[in-house]
Every structure is written in C-alpha cells, then in structure tokens.
Image 1: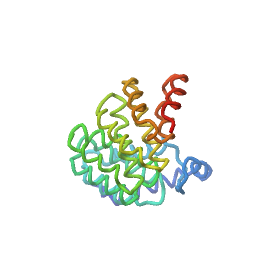
Image 2: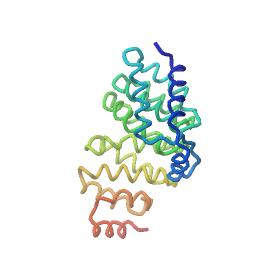
Image 3: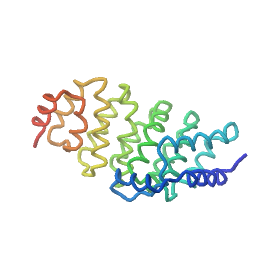
Image 4: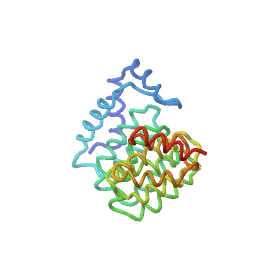
Amino acid sequence: MPTPTEIADRVIQALQKRANPERAEGAQKYFKEKVNFYGLTSHEAREVGLEIFESTKGEWTVREAIQLCEILLPHKYYEARSVAILIFLEFKKDFGPEIFSIIKKWLGRNYLDNWAMVDILCPEAMESLFEKYPPLVKKIKLWTQSPNRWVKRASAVSFISLARHGKYLEAAYDISRRLFCVEDDLVQKANGWLLREAGKTDMRRLEKFLLTGGARIPRTTLRYSIERFPEEKRKKLLAKTKA
C-alpha cells in the first residue's frame, strides 16, 4: 500500500510536470493575498487528484487521506493543497464526527489561507457531516465568533449546498445574522452568497430576512444576496435597508 508520504511526493511530481508559469502568474489576480500557483487549470488539478486517488482505491481509508492532508495542506503551492483536499473528499462517506474538529484545526492553523481553499473543502465536507451528525450544526455556529477570518468564512460557506436545496435554512439564516457585525469583506461576500443560495427556494423568506436586518447588514453582503431579485426589487431593498 502506498504511504501518504509516497502519495504526497507523487502529487508534487505530477503537478510540477504540468506547471504553467504564465497561467500561474495570471491566477494571482483573483486573490488579494499572495498565493503561489503551479499554473494548472481546475480541471487539470482534478485529473491529477482522481488519477492518484485511483492508485489508493481499496487500500486507503479516511485515516490515510487525513495524513496526506497533514503533509500537503502546509505546502507552498495552491494546487498541492487542492489535490489533497480533492482526495480527502473522496472519502466523505466514511467521515466520522471527529472530522469536524480536524477541519476546524486546519482552518485555525491557516492551512486553508485563501477563499478558494475554504470553498473547495467546506461546502462538500460539511454537507456530508451535517447530514450524518445534525448536532454539529449547533457547534459550527460558534465559528462565527472566531478571530480567524477563514473559520468565520467557513461557517457560512459550509451551508451553501444545503441552503441551495432548502435544507437547514434556519441554521443558515442564524449564522448569517451572527456574521452581520463582521467587517471582513471575504466573510461579507460569503455571507451574501449563502443568503443568495438560501433564497433560491424561498425568495419571500429572504426578502423578509433582509428587511428585518435592515441597516445592520453590510452592503457587500446585501448586494450579493439580492442578485437574483428583479432589478426594481433590488433597488427597493437597497433603499429600505440603507442606514
């Protein structure tokens, strides 16, 4: 059975082989913070991840996938970390409740130190965990109080997929409300994204929530959340919630 260290080395070699310095330079424009890239497309990185996952199939468990993340998440390059996450997510059906704390640890250590890393891992991983272990929903609400911006962003994006399908809306709106006081734009954007997804199955509920929140809602959050409303409705909501 290949060890996590051997697989980590294989991941790096595969990524280096496909490196594209020109594309790597262009990828930085999507991030305010400095992020290092090999220059692979998302599709190419996924291909690497799936190819290497296949080499572990039937031999690895979620335990080895966690060990691989512990090796690669501190890595300098974005694609090395994203491939580790993609392999980890292949084991989501086997996630136990302890995965919740492990992800919190990774976030707290800034292993996921940009919006894309958080958004790759948390929606899919947390959806699996919440569906199997509903009490974890109450625990993640405490993440909104974390001093770490990535933990706070994760509290919102963890409900993206669920809210889109009308699940856990009560929790999604509660978390959104708790994040109104956060000044970080990456958290505000994630909060607006969450609200926009929550509104897909119940636009009236979203409108009522926004009107109730009023001027307490950061304008960045508000603008993201109302993107699917008709133009006239957007204008009215912007006016009615203005300080």
